[in-house]
Image (cartoon, rainbow, N blue to C red; front, side, top):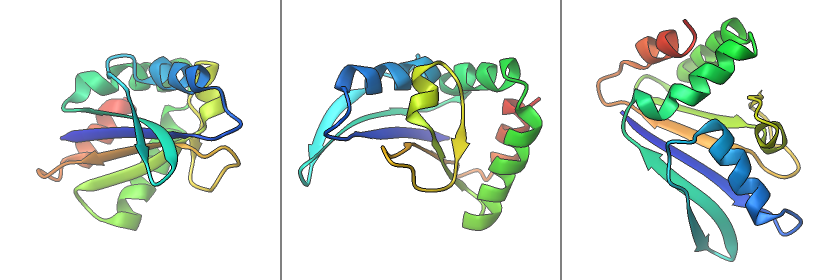
Length: 130
């Protein structure tokens, strides 16, 4: 499994606040500043479930596991087996909350991509939302 997390820093945003939002949900990842095509963003990657452990704990604490399970399964069906992509609200993440989004938001989402060559995403979703 390969995990990629990315968030654009919009001109009206404080870079440190965007980094705090990312680290609140994915504390085990090491985010790096990247610049491409005039855009600034933070990006990190991971390899295993341990990099999703804090995300899993947020789902449990917020009592949104059932809703998250349905949301994430719908995302797999929309894209196909082996790849999962979804967004998180940056403002909620800054407050330490998970808010899954599948629409464009003003300041842009935190983009999360999970690529699993073993097609075990259903098992991963079950683990995240158990």
